[in-house]
Length: 239
Image (spheres, rainbow, N blue to C red):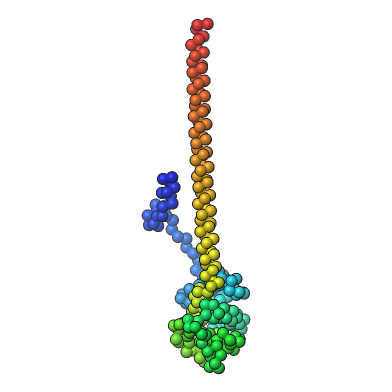
């Protein structure tokens, strides 16, 4: 038990005697964006791969797909992919968790953002008003979207925009339930692992006791045989 407690005790990396150097990982190839923008791209891809199913998002992007979609020299296919991704995420985030204020903001026509029919032509104004309502702090991009479509702003701004939507979606009830269920599953697996480890320790303890009993029995039998042999040798001269 003392050995197990020592093994399970956490140890600082710098105190390890047999520490190994970290492997050298190859650089990501074909990276056409800055470091901060690439970090946002990775975050969005990881988020969508984790929660796309419960958010009903189809065609989850890879890192290369999303990177190509936010570049300004994008093809028509990449541009449509970027717009389609926003058209899938925006209605979900406007519904849940929604807006900080009680009522959804309205556009210049007096329509609430949730009632606007989202298309390639209307998405820019809706997402601009949504970003203002939820406190996105990129004022330069918000000003640019007054005259430019959302797919024409800078790549870093597009990646930050998608990252902001994903951060807002972390407050969605569906995402929170998924996180709670995952945490419960992890706790149950830990309990199951602990129970299995206890059973294994009990079995090993019983096996060690059994081996000790066998050794004691064999030793006792051997000593009896030796005593019997000594007695027989002592009786031979008398005969």
